[in-house]
Length: 397
Image (tube, rainbow, N blue to C red; front, side, top):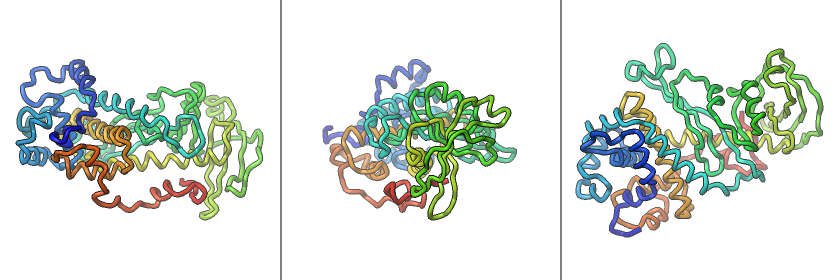
């Protein structure tokens, strides 16, 4: 990268612009557009994500202060907040959703050889959702409760690199379990999810597709023991059983045997019960797989803290989805840069550096290889557990 270009311009080089151009044509994104085309809209919104802008006025003011560098950053004219607002309302959000998916495909290839620490060749995915509360009078389309609006971001996280492989944005009323109908199961892959996703007809669909699942059993699950394997009580495994569902409907919805594992935390004495269709892995590995589900919750926490998806620049469904998808694409773009430039710094550190240096003219590798500008925030208990060595961690609920 040459030293005469801003870091922002160099970062944007990692965007597949030819693919983006085809998406713009597909959805008529630049039809009758005179100023602020789709590429400039993306750059402006990506800039907002990277520099933590709080409003459209904030974006306009910050870019105007660097008017001499705008052309080199990819802007033909100054960015007006009214023009950007209109673009977010009118340009089809699917342009940015499909761009994010292209970036996700790139990132997953780059992180395909990441070590999960579980001695597994299978792909491992964690499925979960996060809810963003909204004002019902301002976002009437985002149905949730009688007095509140909300959007949900349903995410299937590839645990190799913590890259989202599937994202679905819905209103707050969509129940998590319905998202299983939208997945295309990958044969041999392991899907880890909490008990909110326990629906035996849908889990049997995963099973029939050759995929595996690991989840928590509901307290009212009716099942009978078929066989008990030897369990390692020293590791907290109190039972490792083959079971058959005994409920009238559940036995019809899932007619084959399942595996049930009970784990007792030696520190808290809390017992957790897991069910899975994976019959060959050690029971301790099944417990460790469920423990890895915390990564998707950490992903949600990270993206809410460090990207702008809790405060929206527009109120329509199109504007909200546009902002969320561009935020996701920025997250994945930085992950791609981290891998391609072989950087050791965390994504948090890279974003901190970029937020303060986007207008600087220096090689991007040199800028992102600098020491962290400020320390990463202290970890909460859940984050701490996810980083402890396996022999001192315990499974969380």
